[in-house]
Length: 308
Image (cartoon, rainbow, N blue to C red; front, side):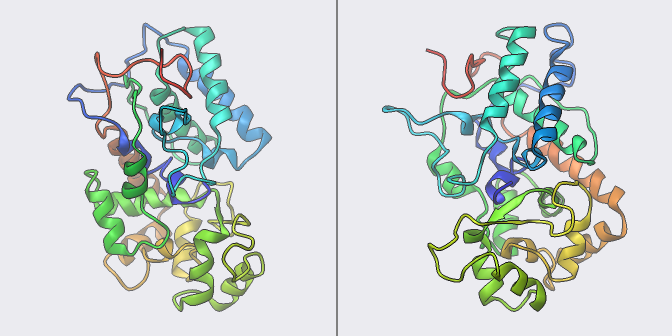
């Protein structure tokens, strides 16, 4: 995940779909496409074997997949996403493979949700049964992407309120932030934290400054790991780093900075299994946020554009 936008991949972008009251289920494809799970998993595992970081890049709301056209503005160029989200070619490959198994059946939104789970599992994280039955949006929200995704400058109150607006608790927010145990962030997203702030370990700040020049516009796209120890393994080191004041983003360190979430961070340091359980709960809740189901939306033939 190149920044919090895509950590939401594992995070907030799922929240940008449109509403429907119908329910998702784990058995939605049991008769119509029983091979979808093994098909998605094989492509995800191959992509991660080729590039470990890809596991942190897969998974977000299907509205993000839509490319801009002359008459359509998508979300890829929204501020939190531009230059950050990636892995679209892997989703294309998964869609192509799934279409060969059961054409016209599985949505891009469900492919993303399954792929996000498989990425977490492949990198050592917890497993869970994914609820499916989503259909694909025919619209995107550039303003929604700009306004609903927490920026890396967010304080605890802003993080909490943005998640609450999607029906996710502060506890969910802290657990889902653990997705930052994998992936990388761009210099432009952590520059202010490592140069200007005091709630950061001095030696760690200097290490990060060495790869991120202080002048804006210089080295903006230089990358650093969100979890300095094991950025390609899904475990609880992210929280251990916060306690040591080695959170890369301002928004990361806010979770352990003398506030209401300190105790929860401590609990995840003490028990990785507690973190895993809460992360799964948060992911399932996030996947339930206003999906398109039933006759709403469509099953895209190509994840990058709506059907014509």
